[in-house]
Length: 371
Ligand SMILES: NC(=O)c1ccc[n+]([C@@H]2O[C@H](COP(=O)([O-])OP(=O)(O)OC[C@H]3O[C@@H](n4cnc5c(N)ncnc54)[C@H](OP(=O)(O)O)[C@@H]3O)[C@@H](O)[C@H]2O)c1
Image (cartoon, rainbow, N blue to C red; front, side):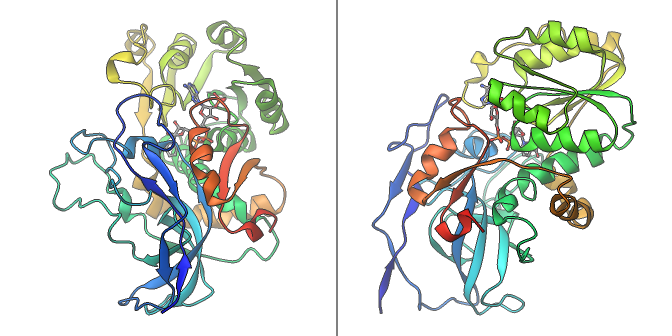
């Protein structure tokens, strides 16, 4: 038996509200090993190529007694998230060596799939019906793009961010019409940048914001009609100047939601996708939106969604449309690469500490940084 190094990012300690601490809650371990020839017990062995740090992972790192929409991760096991892997060996029917697969996978170099120890025991937990068992997002085969687009796009426009934008627009706002106006917060984020582009493709007027001038430039390069820095402009005043809004795609909640509500058109629709401004806060610290009464006065609608709910129905359409648009250059994507799993924690924390410059991708196998 020969052992191969199998570095990992360990979920070491349950955090409270507030920023995660590298080395305390999340720990990079270089010493674990794996026997790559060990029995697979009917499963398959994968090599991790790319990982996608994503905001929803923060909520999974919590005291399991707290209910939210997701199941928690398991302390003492590697962090789990979306990634691209390649199959090295397989005992599973329909999965063969060389296959590329995308879906949930532990943050480690090699994994015997299905991963079992890092999976939360949902069947044994007494969770409310709105809870989604995240560990069911198992690996799915993906075709080799053979150079028509880069592999890293499976962690951005072709991964969860792109899917979330597509699924949210198709399932919540299928009646969007050319000429209508939408405001997108976190417009340079993985999800936001895709919403900007899909809405421009549908002929909407798009207003979008981000926290830095370089991100604002990026949003403009995607075709947004109005792009502004929400840290230096008054959001409500900017929306008043360019509104009213038929749609607001809310990635952040809090004050930006309040500013959007203030500027919604009659019968406008607010699509709530996420709450970036709240993920690191205790409930009592979250900003209390003050103008909720405008929802009835202006007959507004608010609709939340969880991408995975409509995924089975919409994934085939997404795969038929979006990779082709990407290959034709009609959809763009910008990623910030963190090369090496040892950079994984830094990449994840960049989502929350203002240091992210674009959608972060952790490149575990260096060859995939430029392929
Ligand atoms: N409902 C679903 O099924 C679903 C699925 C996927 C994602 N989402 C949600 O979609 C949103 C975007 O996700 P993503 O994967 O696109 O994220 P991402 O690419 O990692 O970008 C997240 C962005 O959030 C912004 N941000 C960070 N801290 C913030 C704060 N305190 N206040 C306001 N903005 C802050 C930053 O942009 P700026 O620097 O411009 O502020 C950051 O670049 C998140 O809310 C996520 O939870 C929802």
